[in-house]
Length: 170
Length: 170
Length: 170
Image (cartoon, rainbow over all chains, first blue to last red; front, side, top):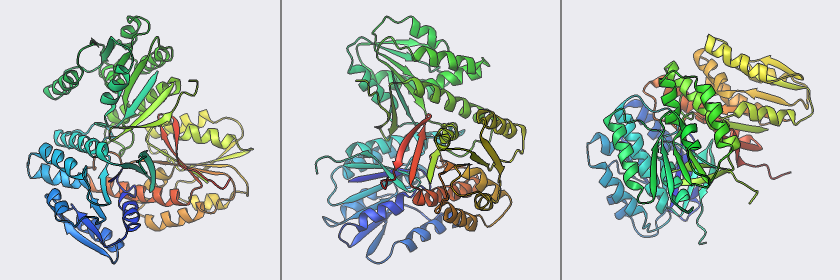
């Protein structure tokens, strides 16, 4: 399992797509985004248009574990992205800490080449509002949980991957 | 002296604790946090409960140099963290630039394995308010001053250390 | 062409100056900053006073491509910085996406040792206001475009360079 973390517009999704399509297809794209507004709809359609033939798209704004369980063994998967999935659970007032623990457990036992994308959101000034601080804490903890069980962790900087953790078993 | 920098919830303190406890104890934890509100109190007690036996805790919200001077030679120390200490000096309207220079001077001559934790706060959008911008500038400068005199500098990314500067003397 | 990216007060300009002055002078400093207010004027004069003899300063808040075209071949140049230049174009309501494409094209064919400085602004919480989000997206895309054509990319962390991309041709 490869974990790809980076800031906004750091090229996370594009790099992850390159890594996934280097595996033998078909490929599955698991989208966690929900098109609440026009800005979001535009981002989603931009991402979709960049992916071409050979991709199946699965929407999983909340039940990411279920979407992963439904996949056949060996299927290359791009999960994009954890921070939106976490946002959806927080907005729905679910027990997001339990959800995070369950998800980290599921991705720790990948049944194929799984690529997980997430945002780094903790390197700015402390946010004014308490909800943003809670989100920042939860996202940071989730990122740590997933990075801990990943084989490879990449930090995206201006479209380029910086290796943070490398699987030395191969 | 090892300098550990990273975003919020990037695993700085936990990683620093691992490094400190790899040294022979007893260990000293120098806390710069002040429990102004419940949120802060909760964070402090979370950090305390994670540390176990063998730790002495010293509170030094302002006089970090004094707390370090009072320690015996050779004592492994975790200073957590510089950005809160800087916040305390700025809120108290002290000459924080002089304080920063003095602190950088003190940690440049460590009397044992000293581990210093700080936050990266400059990788977000320029903050709206002038105080946040002043803090961001001051924190960035302080981080540069301490990193310049550190033997080892680690950037924490999702709980994993990325080596930025390595002591090649050993 | 060397691309130097980092957060606020991460030591980008100082490190870039060190790299430029390691080349044979005279050196050209292309400043994109506009002194809108006292805070900005102070930053500009701080940067100027740090640079000494042997530097020519060119102001290019908007026409960066023109300023670069006017330089003689082989001249070491420090372009400081892309994010302010982008801000100027966005505030002027220019077609900034076209400007970014043109600039990336110009710096992809450097006529000497060119050093380009930019800010990482995408690693904080999603900004509240739409303009800040647009800027963050545009800056991230511009950084990717320039990094893609750079020979060397450095991420500044607390004043220290972390190599993200290295030119292996030399």
